Length: 335
Image (cartoon, rainbow, N blue to C red; front, side):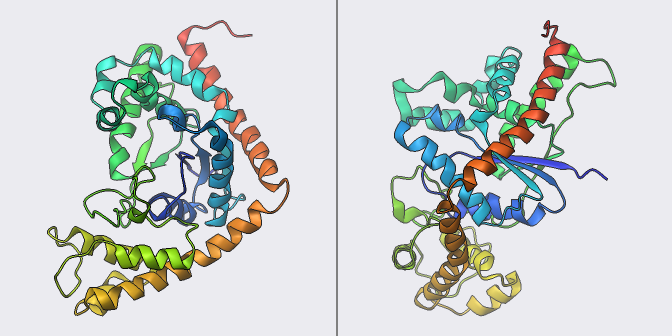
């Protein structure tokens, strides 16, 4: 019986951190035996903001290695580089020509990032949600793992698919199927260590705001020691007036492997001086095997190249079938 398919990806910009791991990669690992997973490095998306050309290929390889180090199993998953499959930008162009401009103007992330870039903002930042729609639909997944902040992008994808099916398909016979979101209950939105109201992000100028997956133990200790807390003794989940408390408890919950009830009971009477060493040791212990496997992968000559070449071949075969279906429906003459 064919397993349902999922698709997701991460931009290879900067170091991957706990937010990437707990909010995405670990979820992929947990579901991979139940799904046919297609996981990519979104290097085309990475250039929608200013980037360092000398680091792009290296960062892409590092993200691929980190997928594997975190537990992605090639018996269940296909790992590939977005730019290696030419169907991604080609389908993006076809979708772009049927996407109303006002749909893109309404995207929250464009508005936020455009403010930061000012007059130098590129057209790619406006249109990248259409490329994201193409990324998804080339593989026609049943589910797309997304965080709460990405739900708007998946809704845009569904709008584009509905528009495409209406214009080029037949009633009750859609050409492309609608993907459904898969939203993780815990840890889908890991927050900054310096501001519990903001998402942990690679773009934050302060390295103290995040724990990177390759941070050594001493640096993890420093970051947790300096992280923002509050003056209240006793740590509880769910208090909206204590965002840092909820974030740090959630990190401890996810990294320690304990139940929410056990963490709530353990920490109910604690002060921050007692709690921070617990979180520190849980983070160090959890990341150590990941870091060891990552370095083993990076030090094995030719291994990643083989993984990504095989991933490209498998992804390309499926993507090209979808692209052919779309172009045929749109009336293109095909070779």
